Amino acid sequence: MTLFVKDANTTVQSLATEVDGNGNLVPVHAPAATNAQGVSSAIGPQNPMPVINAAGAVASDGSGTLATGGSAQTLFGGIVPANGFVVQNHSSAALWISDVGVAAAGGASIQLAANGGVFATPSGYKPAGAVSLYGATTGQLFAARRW
Image (cartoon, rainbow, N blue to C red; front, top):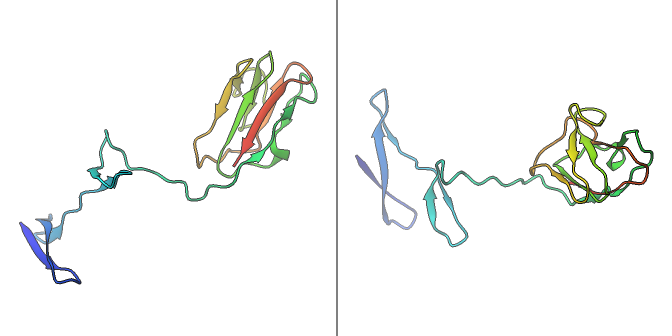
């Protein structure tokens, strides 16, 4: 069934409706997303609803070198990133990163491969705790940003 309504400009607009489980006439809403060209498409598995992180923040640098080989160190001065972070290994040996405890070689830590290994969180990801980094050698170089 289609219900006709008038908008503020008195133009007749159709509104799709259906009968609910109680026999009431209710509007049918088809969720859709609009692309950059202004074309709307129905939301579904092949066209998921876009998500925008409105709580984003300007990135803050946390790059540096490993202060003491064989000992974990916190990144970003121990501040827990509010909306995510990225770390890249610029050294010739592996590094390990953890946001759920003290980083170590293995365990719950994530390995960053030598010469460019990267770990990046999705936008809006808030770590469980301070980000910790571990490497075997003093002076291992890394780049890091938090937002």
